[in-house]
Image (cartoon, rainbow, N blue to C red):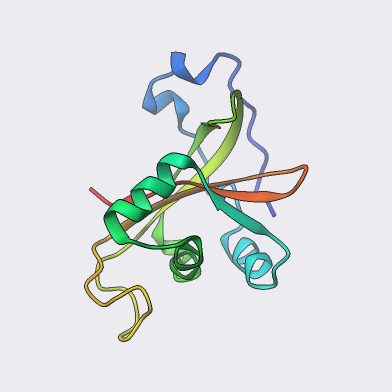
Length: 141
């Protein structure tokens, strides 16, 4: 499911700048394979507390609707890869990819609406159990 396995940073993420958290050579994850596994029900997903709050405040969406949005992403929407930590285990680091779905990209009549701004989506996949986590989902700036 990965294009490559980058070497993890050897210092805590809170000691790194945004630029130092970036992973060169991304994307780390094979978007089409992740989308296929999600569609087949073989890869479950969840929102972090922060991304869940942002999704509700900005879009009034559920996790299902975030999944609909995720399946609209294409390789050319890739923005960057970076190291992230998750709330339950802030000392563990994960490689995440971010994408921006352009404004007006959704097909007419989409369940997500027709007046959607550009949307920034960042996700990572962890194992044991295999689970995709949406780290950020919000209007792109």
